Length: 129
Image 1 (cartoon, helix red, strand yellow):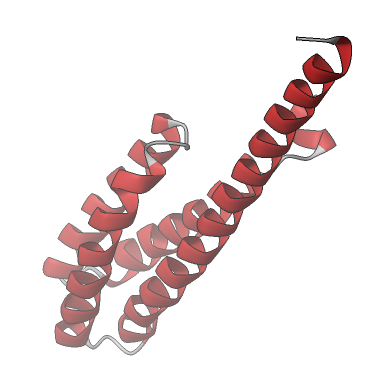
Image 2 (cartoon, one colour; image 1 turned 180 degrees about the vertical axis):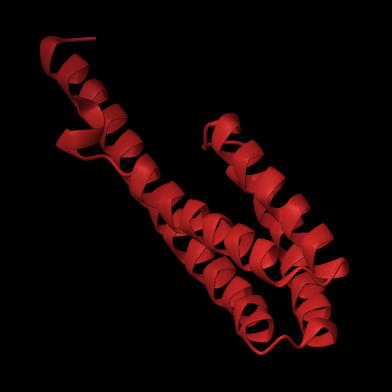
């Protein structure tokens, strides 16, 4: 392989990594937005103290989260995913127990974590240093 062939190989590898990173970031942004919107349905039900609707909305959210969680586990720090899982487990139990203040607090934390993960994984100067 000549000198230019080596440069070309390095260039192709860098392009593949860059495009792959952009696609992963796009997936994280899209799925986080979908999960956030779904979880906000739960929050609206909690605001109105509609516990049955809250349970139904949470069940739909939880089903979507199980699918996304498996994919996120490939690229996201497991501590972040575990934090979301813990908040969601507590939220589920607070909804079941009809605990207004506690469920709203856990909802807020879970929503913040879901929206924070794509930002944390984004390639920025702040995240590099």
